[in-house]
Image 1: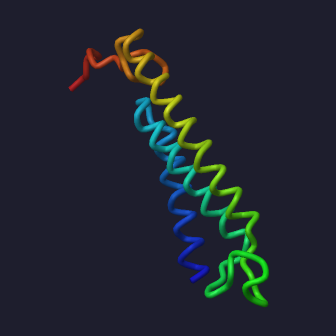
Image 2: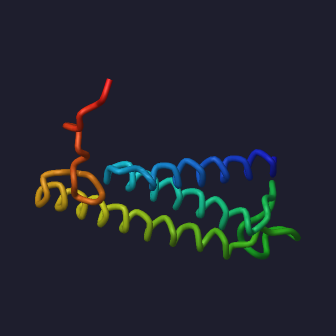
Amino acid sequence: MELLYASCVGLLVSCGVFLILRARTFTVVLGLTMLSYAVNLFLFSSGRLSLNQAAVLGYSSEYADPLPQALVLTAIVIGFAMTAFVVILAIRGRSDLGSDHVDGKLPDTNKKVNA
């Protein structure tokens, strides 16, 4: 179970970093979102993965740690707000610059290729 969980976090991190390094703003936004999902899963796993344990004190002798759950819920809300903000910035940059490339410049496709 832990190996599967850790590999999912690693896969999300690697895909997120790959997308962040792309040249278009939409892929950068997707990469940041995937990276935030990976961080949320990592924070959630810091409370130890446990099955059949109460989330509230007093209902069982063993309970799940509520702090990582609260951190993840807060991170989800903040991540959603930041994603909406970055999408608005990307739309504004596209309308102002006429391009959705991260640096604002189109790649030069008119280079002559020597055969």
